Length: 362
Image (cartoon, rainbow, N blue to C red):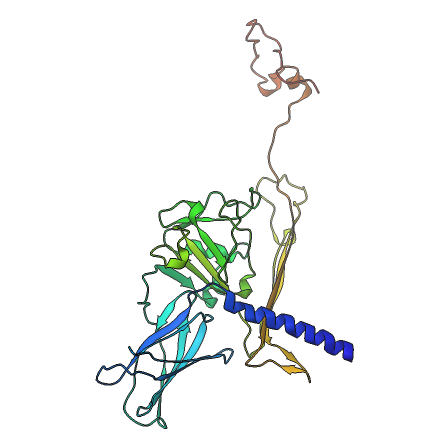
C-alpha cells in the first residue's frame, strides 16, 4: 500500500508540473473590456471575476482609472464574466468564447442598484475583434473534428483559409521531411508553425513533421497579415494549433480508420485472374481528458487536470504498373516481331536485317 501511494504521488507531481507549464506558453489570448454606467462614465475599481466553464478556473481583477480591465494569457475556452461595484447591480455575462491568440472585448454597462440584485446575460455570436488588426481565421473544435482530412493531419486545415496553399517542399521523404505553406504574398520559408505557442518547425527550413492527433486538437488558427509584435521574426503564414485541456468532466474518444484490399475492387489494368495487390491501412488511437482523481488520496476537480492522446499507423501497400520487357531477339537488335508485316532495315547498311543493339545481351 505504501508503494502504491508513492507511485500515485509521483504521477500526481508529474501531472501538476505539466499543468503548471501552460502558463509558460507564449500566447496572446485575453479577455478585455471597459465598464461604464448608464451615462457613459467609466467605473473605476469595479471587481472583475472570470470563470472558465470547463475547469472552474477563476481569474480576478479590478478596473483601472479608465474603467478598463484585461485578463491576459488565459486558455482558449468559454468563460463567464462577473462584475460588481458598490451602488450598482451585479452583472453576470455567460458563454463568452475566447479563441487562440485573440483579445476578446466585452464592454459592460452597469445599472444603478444594489449588489444583492444581479442581471445575467447569455452571450450569443462572438463580437468582432477590435483590439488588434490581426487578419486571421480560426477553425474551432467542431470544424477540426468534422472536416475531412486525408491522413488525419490537422495542419492541412490551414489550406481551407483564403490565400494559403501547401508548399512544394512538403514531402514525407524530403530532407528534412515535413510540410509547409505559402501565403500572405511571402515565400514558404517565412512561415511560423506552432503548437500551444511553441514552435514545431525544423531549424534547417520552415517545415514540420509534427502531426498531432486530430481528436486532441481544440483549434487551428491561420494568420496571414497584420501581425502583432510577437510574430516579428516571420512575415508569411502563421499557423497556430492549440490542444485540448482536461476539464471537470471526463471526456474521450476512440477511433480507427480502416482500408483493406478485401473491400476494394481490382484496379482497371489488373490482368484477369491475378490476385489483388495487398493493402492494409489501420490508423487508430484515442484521446482522454478529465480531472486527476486518485481515490482516497487526491481529488483534482477544479484544480488539476490531464489530457492525453495516442495515434498509431500500420500500413502495408503495393502498387501495380504496366511495363514492357525486351525479348532476347530485341536485345540482339531484331525488332521484327513488333511489325510482322514490315521488314526492318539496318540504318547503317540500308539492308534488311538486325541492327546493332544498344542494349547489353542478358
